[in-house]
Image (cartoon, rainbow, N blue to C red; front, side):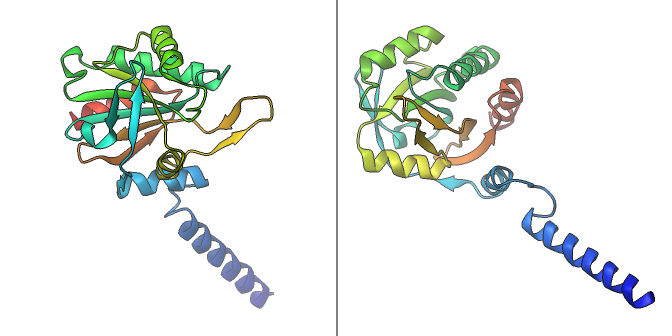
Amino acid sequence: MRCGLLTVLAVTVLGLATLAWGTDGFRAFTDEGARRHAVHTNPRPLPAVTLQDQTGRRFGLDDLRGRLVAVEFIYVNCPSVCRALGQAFARVRDALPAESLGQDVVLLSISFDPQRDRPERLADYAARYGADTGSWRVARVEDPAELQALLRSFGIVVIPNGFGGFEHNAALHLVDRRGRLARIEDFDRPLAFVERVREWL
């Protein structure tokens, strides 16, 4: 009886130790949680990419260094989650100090459907949510290799759904002044994201 109890206790301790190791001390119970925790503790460098915004202007992600950059990934034709992302980003913009927008903080919506989301369609998305080029740019990465590298760096998974759209994960991302991915927050909690941004201002 005592031997059986010790075996159960040993298995329980081993199981808890394994769970603690696999969840980074019980902080992350999912792959997504682990990814976010890893980014929060060790900001992730991002690749150099060239983007084209809703006006047709091209710029590099590196051009935004020195400012905080809030990033969302969308595609214009998205009928569901991207609409919620756009609304969340508009709430982020409205909740940030007006004097910081465009100066200390830039919002950046990046399409992962560059073949269809050309500048005129990006401009439609921008108009839908009141995005101006000074504080909120809507852009695409034209080069497929650069786009894939960027998606990998942010941990964005995009899968064609067979109906002309995509299944994809969604979040609000914060890039620090050194151009590193530093925070990932739920898109349905935009005011919590704003609090994170304010901590960096």
